[in-house]
Image (cartoon, rainbow, N blue to C red):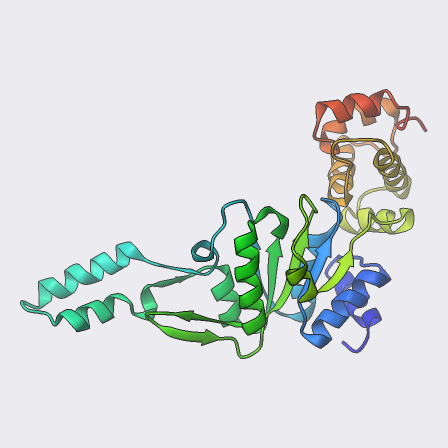
Length: 286
């Protein structure tokens, strides 16, 4: 791919419709081999972009889902303790007096190493590494991740240094539940992912749900855009718009009438307070 437009076309082939800004950021990340930091509200398509990028470029996708308390061992590697014990029993049963040093070395053979996402990303070629919701991880993990991304290598004391021939293309996402440290952001290209405009949201809905009528897709996109202007706890993203349109389509709706819309709000809104606010706001009226 020689331009952002060609990347956008390749992404569209996977079903992901990227705007010009996101396609440009993705193209530069591929060309410059720089991590891409995507920030934006939940449901705008950050995770889906990484998945589509992997498919469009023919790369393996490795996903690391971040959460509070995530540490290096959970993200990097672990030893398969049950298999090590089976190996130990097998050797001691077969040999009356096994060599202690050789026995210990055998326990830390590469075959007993369980590769977690970061190690998988270093070993798979080519690879897109999705570090999802980095804002949920702790500060210490951010620092560790920065080191791994900078070196594209890790050292396992019992095995040695493992380095990627070609560094994985890292896509980091954040819903901005907290600010990520500047040191990590400086290492990355940055892009804020906006909610799509009306025409692009309609196109996304029709691409994901081919049986959806154009009229219903437009009405869902319009209603979702109106909801995003309300003071909701969780405004709907594109993912919720797709879920809502799918629910309406499953009920046989061809247009969005207020009664059916109100009955299916649980597909697009996830808090009772938001549902009550939308029902009383008039945004579901034609």
